[in-house]
Image (cartoon, rainbow, N blue to C red; front, side, top):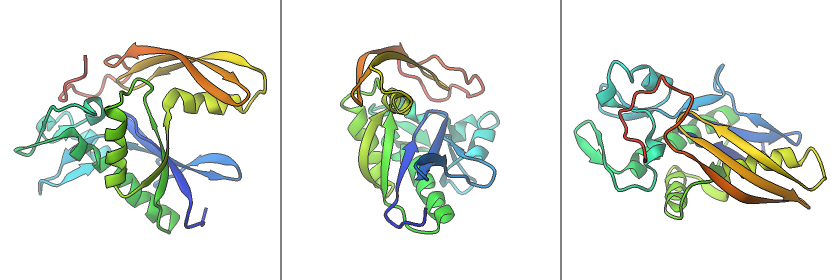
Amino acid sequence: MNEPDVVIEIDLRTINSEVAIIENDQPVSVRKGDETILPSCVGLDDAGNITVGQQERNQSVAAPDKTIPSIKQLTGSNQTVNTGGTNDMPQKISTCTPATLHKYTEDILGHPVSKTAITVPGYFTDVQRPTTRDTVEIAGFEIVRIINEPTATALTYESLSDEPRKILVYDLGGETFIVSVMRIEDGIVEVLSSTGNNSLGDDLRIPSSVPRRP
């Protein structure tokens, strides 16, 4: 854990994001106080600065004009988002979440962190993937690997058995629902099919101040 060249894993999700490291060959979530997750909610404070976290989620109902609850939905799009009178690209705003994760991870671990693996939705396009890479690199990270979210799930499952098999990964997230059929054989994970709805999720508390993708 005290190794300066440690590689962390960042799970950038629509509603909540999280950082994990490997300890004793097991993934462990990096804990900030009593929490292991950071709400991926971006907001403006009284000074007009962009901030991320639970406080921003709390203000989303009272001040929707100062809150962007699900900026990930606009990854790779050319649609601008108004932030305090300024129209910014989603990529600029999205940088705030990994930048916040970067700072508090270094504070908690007590040493610089520069390398990370990141997960992205299986449905992300060839535009959305490099956009996500750029967003995380601007936040100060060197990306060593980008992994599809269902593939990351399957890799964990794969470690439980050596038998070739097909599995279904069911991901009902905050604002997306993705189902992937995957084949695991000889340590190789292959996505056979993936589909879903980018506007269907289980978190109904988040206001629709950011338009969702069709």
